[in-house]
Each structure stands twice: as C-alpha cells, then as structure tokens.
Image (cartoon, rainbow, N blue to C red):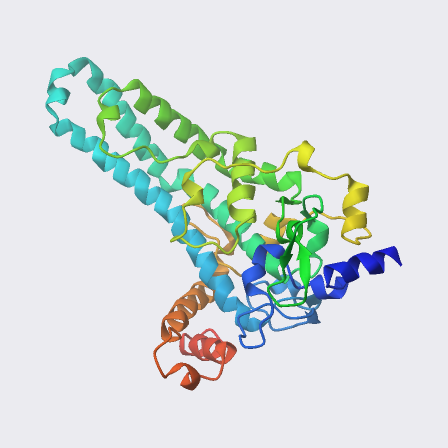
Length: 362
C-alpha cells in the first residue's frame, strides 16, 4: 500500500518508468517522432545496432537508431578532435624553431627535440588506437543503454528531496532528484579493461607532458598542451569515462567539450543512500551492474580505430552507413517554412531506403 502511494505521488507507475531512462530524457516517447524511445518495452527482432536487445523486451524502436548512429559518430569525432589538437600543438611547437630564442638557447635544444619526439609517439596510431577503440566500445555500450528497460537497477540516484519540478510530459509534479543520476553502476572489470587498452597511451602522455615542462623552448609554443592526463592513471581514466561518456552518452561536439577538461566527480560516499534505501525508494527488488564493455562489443557499431586491430571492423559498413544516413536525414529534415508537413513518410522508411541504396539494407 505504501509503495502504491509513493508511486502515485510521483505520478508515474513502475511500468511507466521503464522507458524513461533519465540519461536519455530528451528522447523519451513522443507520438509525433519515430526517433524517440518506446512508450513501453516491447520484444523486438529488427534492431540493427544494439542487436543484443533483440528477442527481449526493450525500449528502442528502429527510428531511434538514427540518433544512436549520429551520436556514436559524434564520439568518434570528439576523440579524433583530441588527436587533431595534439597534432596542431606539435606543429605549433615546431614553429618555435623560428623564434630567436631557439638560436640563443642551444643547451635547451635537446630537450626541445625530445618533446617533439614525445609528440610523435603519442600520435602513433599503434599507441592511441587501441585506447580510442576501447573508448568507442564504451560509448557504444552506453548508447545501447537507452534500450535497457531495466535501467533503474543499474543507476544510482540521489536521495529524494522535497522540491518538485513539472514533468515534461504533463503527468504531474515529480521530485527534482528524479531528474538526475549520480552514477551508472559499471563493473570494476570494465575499468580494468579500459586501463589495459589505454595504459600505453597513458605512459606516452605522461612522458610528453614531462618533456614539455622540462623544455623552456617547447613551453614557448603558441598553443596549449591538449589535456591527456586522464589516460595517465587507471582511476582517473575510469572516472573520466564515467563522468564524460556514461553520464552524457548522447553528447555532441558543439557542446562544451567535456572531454578536454578534468572530470568533476559527483559521486562520493556522503552523497549515497544505503542499498536498502535505494531499493525501497525506487521500488526495486535488486540492483545490477551494467556491463558497458560487453554491451558495446555485442553491438554493431564500428568501434575500430586505425592501429587498434579491433574485432568490430566487420560491422563497419552498417554503423558508418547509418551515421551518414542520420546526418543526411537531419539536414533534409531541417525546418523550411511551409514544408514541414510535406516531408517523407517517417524516419524508419528513410533509413531503410538509405541503407538499401548503400547496399546494406535487407
């Protein structure tokens, strides 16, 4: 009875919440858009990206795959942007050779060229490729988390507060804390796997940072050093991946670039409820960890990166093609006065047509 009253106060039953993952709130069910999550979980057999959720009740409809492919492409662009900025910083450092100070400080030249060499090592695909491929697996797994109808069992939320906010779907007031997630429960093994793939990049990144600090000439570069310190330590990497990727799976490059700044962690013991309180508050019978790396590997996103020897290269055609389709469709769907009502027969139809033209669709 108490539980029923509690859920009634929230204005949402347990079943209503299954497809309302707070990390994907902007894509909650919308009857006017096929690019949204389902209203209620259904068994599917036609998912082409998060295929592990086929055959079980899940929250994804095929139209949402445009958004999933698009945001996965954004993560690849974000990671590539880091390499581009490292390369630009290297070129700016080489420009210091034209500085009069370069001729005057002969004793510092060895340290200068050592820093340049460290740049080259970080930029070597065999060094950063494995790490970035693993991060793409992580991103793919978190994007597929949108399909998980049992998502509430895999997240930690703050204690329920007294303040309320209006539900975006007009179904009454909800506690403000229900609109936030403190963390996703990810198994420690995923952190170990990330570090195994990124530790080599971490060593090279640390060596680069120290070489630049040791060279007064390298410090004269007109561009700042790209932030790579998250790769230098296992816990720092795991915190960064969680805070930047897991907490913002549907991000885009034109937002504030969280990937280029140190993470601000919100999760510490003093903010957490006990296991019993968490289960009781969210009406859960148990909690579970979301194996993001396993889900990412099971998906058909292309997580390969040059130099990574990724096992996911076989699915490259589908995920890249869907990303192209998603971007083209987004451009085509851009509002034009007087034309909105006349465009197309739905996102899913557009996807199928695009994939057939690319020779990938059924």
